[in-house]
Length: 214
Image (tube, rainbow, N blue to C red):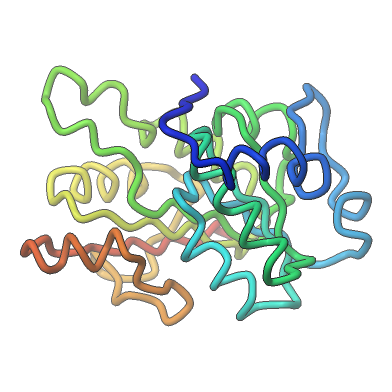
């Protein structure tokens, strides 16, 4: 489901004028990263890039890697498009569609060097837990799209969701935990404004770092 929200004039202009340049439209056919980025490089998919602050920072710090950010929230897409334009980030593109459908229909098996899943919607009410993205079927799909040795890095500040993700990813045969349970925050994941606000409220952030078995 596409989520619109309150879009600022700058974000609206970005959606109208910059998406054709930096956006990728959904198609039920496999994506050719070389055609998108003009080179062959490791490809990382970020699911739920939010307002794009951390996404742009990671792309800027890793110019040898190409990144595709998936986000359905209109203001977030517009904000990230503006960051790409302002910082001239040639290794970052945006795709506005459901993440599971993108993985299934646009990403070839074993094509990804990594998947980022930072602070997905926790759906905190118990009756809504079935809406959480991380379920066994998603874990199997994500693992299949990772190249052998590729990584899946997730983070959340909701303890019960962290425990749920740990259990689901640990049960997926193609994935192997790189830590005993939760991992130290990898240096490549910057702390976003959202995360800093949560930390100030006393929310403990948990990182999970799994690797596709070779």
